[in-house]
Length: 196
DNA sequence: GGAGCGATGTCCT
DNA sequence: GGACATCGCTCCG
Image 1 (tube, rainbow, N blue to C red):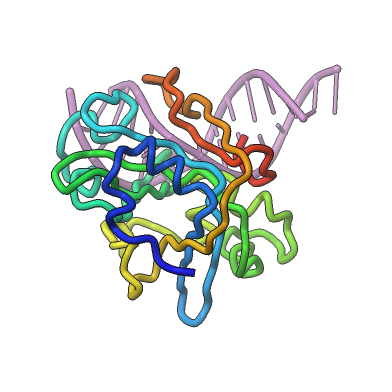
Image 2 (tube, rainbow, N blue to C red):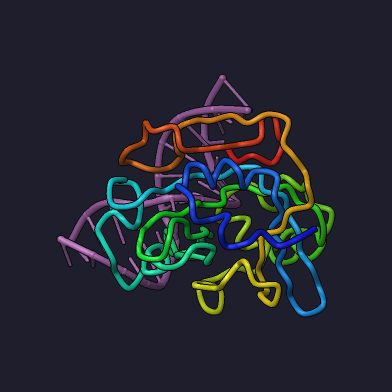
């Protein structure tokens, strides 16, 4: 199992989003390691994508999207949820991939605790949805936004254990009002942890 | 099991 | 002041 290098993220978001399927998100909290397999992603493009946070141009909030590839972009939405993205494209160009769902692999009891669910709760409820997966991994803006996901020292990383998805399904993106027709959502076909 | 809806903070106009 | 890349609860069948 090795950390995915920064050059992986230099490409276009729709390519990176597709290739991230099957990779692992590794979250270190103290001695614990919470691990989930990426089963659903969405690509958000740059200045030509009205649904993207980078569409209005560079602001304080979206600056990570315009920065170097492989960094965590975390934002707060609907007054109570966080969402996790990774920046793509070279430094100076906007683009990113939203993580929409994981399949829990390791640390399920701690994920349930962070979610406020009883130990032994259905794995589906832990990390199927962008807000849920952030809560299950203890991800918020402070301390995580801007973090380099390609550094072995980071407490949040993307890793590759060689797993290759059998099938990939492409659909329009979910929960957006603008540009909701573009096929930029990617998921592992038939996976139980994909969001609704 | 599905439709409807309220909660609630931050950012940008 | 309004929109928002969401979630979980209620109510109905």
